Length: 162
Image: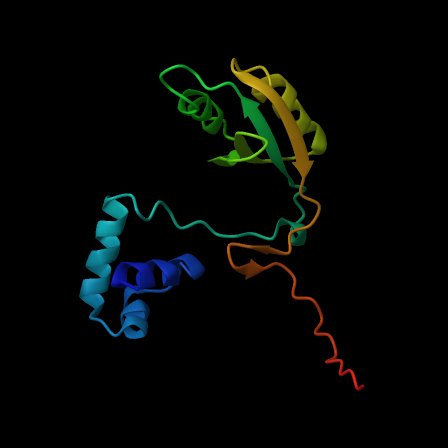
């Protein structure tokens, strides 16, 4: 594993680590680590440092949905032109080109089921080239980006004697 990969793995798991902490963990000089992070940011390898929030522990109601989108690729642009149009919406948290039964996976958040439904039927489904959608609501998050939302109580170890 090269140094970039180790550094990136550490930052992906905890973006609050300081260059000094990272340098200690990697056995490197702090200035070298800080310079490498600056280069990774400049070259858009590191795109941001988002906080992962458990919205169920706040007073805010947040609804998250995964939307499967089927599209007809555009001549010369493939899927990119439609994807670009979709990812510009503020509600869109992530957008992926997929293999399989559908073409794009869109993750959005909204204040209610109605807000998500409104986004799908009034904004997403009417885009030229979109041929179908299927919306799946996230009911409970267990783990995201390597972080557990709620650790389940440890089960007793069960031994089977035969």
